[in-house]
Length: 318
Ligand code: PBG
Image (cartoon, rainbow, N blue to C red; front, side, top):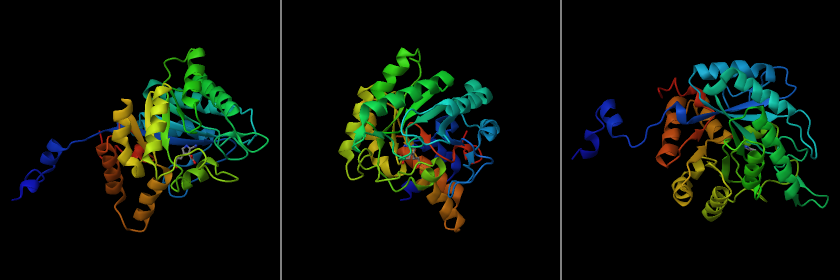
């Protein structure tokens, strides 16, 4: 009797036998920087994760570092939407701004995708017949990634799901002398209804169709394993499942199959689910947020990308 209660009697006993624990070192804080914006703009559901003008980015990074954030994921939203031939100038200035503030204390990953550049809002280019232009897509991704690394990015995080992009990015980075810049691949990324706030933040909603032609179908774990094994074989250093909370069943299996660290991205809709529950008085936000992180850790996540990373210190994580 009471066997399951005995070690729950005090916080110290619960800490003693907790199977997982983690700290701010394993959390990654997203940042949105938007070209041409006059003042920060709130994103519905994302709390203090504003769309930031470049002029406000440095101060945000400084405050985040003071709060103990060590890892950042930068999303760059350029002003001009184009068909192809994307310009990394604004992104480079943003990367330089973060690194000027953070230096080695801020590890900066840069989300690498085409959807906030393309007039179509898609993560790939299309040819004149409306079919995916894979060689053109890979060339654009590689030139962006190279520019990001040249500007000082610590890591490249391709989120596009196009075939062969990790191999192409790896070869491009190596040839440019960035052979120590790791690739964090969004390797198991599902077509999802949970990206809503992000598409407002990054101005990246598809203007025609959807992303089901290249993102994974939630009904299939098989494809998530295959896509992750593909990214590992192509040279990814870190893998990720996304949406994180609804993919926890896959994390351990991907880790076992690839031998690589697998992170979880608690995506915008998942995070907004918590903020909106709390706003309605239906949940204690802090408790629910911590619970969600512990569950992803329990499932085997090596790291977590979350809009709440900057809150972790206040929640008691070391
Ligand atoms: C870009 C990208 C998306 C997210 C991260 N990178 C959106 C999408 O694929 O539609 C979603 C992140 C979130 O919802 O928090 N390809």
